[in-house]
Image (cartoon, rainbow, N blue to C red; front, side, top):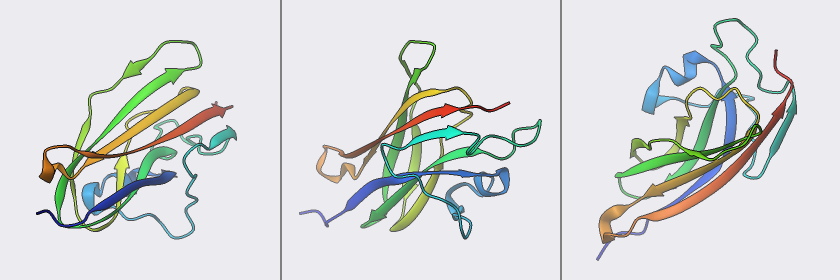
Length: 139
């Protein structure tokens, strides 16, 4: 018998490198906007503002309740220029509460599908998915 566990991709946020640099201990800064799954981000929202691109980094906001377990986040890119590209998964240690997972360098417009898999205790992973569309005018 396994304990109940529930996890979901709550949305996406744009943060700077001081947040992503915290790894699994990262916390969403006060006032940070969470874009719900299915959001379309337009204009200059979330665009990097410096030449080093140390801000405007995209994280998946994951809410999980249950015993500590393993999880993974897999991104499939559908760039505006065409194609489908599945990235290698990010493996994460999940604890109860909110987890931020950096999605890697994402600068191009397109659709990004995120698959969150977790709780392998029964042999079959539980899953949650979300999509983010970028249609920005970044410099």
